[in-house]
Amino acid sequence: MSGLTVNIDLVAVLRSVRRLNEPDPAQAAVLSELAGADGIGVQVRRDRKYIRDRDLYILKSVVKTKLVCELPPADELIGLAAEIKPWMVILVADHADSDSPVSPIDFDSPAIDFGGITDRFKGIGVNVGFFVGPENDDIKGVARAGATAVLINCSGYTDARTIEDAQSELDRIDRAVSGASKQGLAVYAGRGVTYKNIQPLVELGYVDEFIIGHAINSRAMLVGYERAVKEMLALTKSPRAGG
Image 1 (spheres, rainbow, N blue to C red):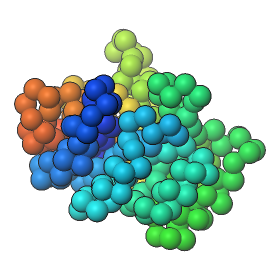
Image 2 (tube, rainbow, N blue to C red):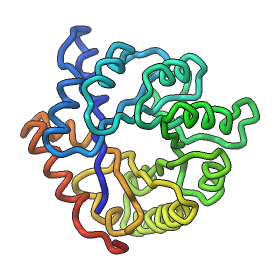
Image 3 (cartoon, rainbow, N blue to C red):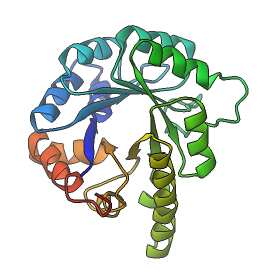
């Protein structure tokens, strides 16, 4: 079985439309946990367009499972995360255009001391992961940086338009998650994962936990948070091929 971390960013996106204080991401976090979620995830941008600093402090106090924060390796955000001390920090690469999706980390960047960042967080008891593509070299980069986990980008699979392309991408993910597991890394997977396409990923047998936001939050608007989370949990908790 795989765990489920519910990303609640979409609640903050909806809040930003009218620039009001509702809906509250913290309430979504509580409802997700009551429904059985194993963790709560947020993505912190440099411009704080959606998730705000105040949200992080509140979430730290109300989340009873695991608070997982995705953020770029910017000094200001690293300092903020070090103060809040979430359960895990996952490092991502962002863009000047804050509306562009974040990208996988490039370990060839000479300007960032990934090992130093990892050591800083691990020194205060915070787990560290990296968002990477399903490539063996990237998995090795995560291990060299001393991380405890990896978040595999599944968008190649989830965006595939043909069965052949989907299977090819699924094979890439299979090799990546298998390699990460052999490296002793906790394996997370996400990006575009839905109720309809998650089963083949579960059946790989190596994904310890999924981080899913859009699909759950979209479903919750129609049926409520409890049902939306429980429906996804029923899929992630189904027996895996390797477990």
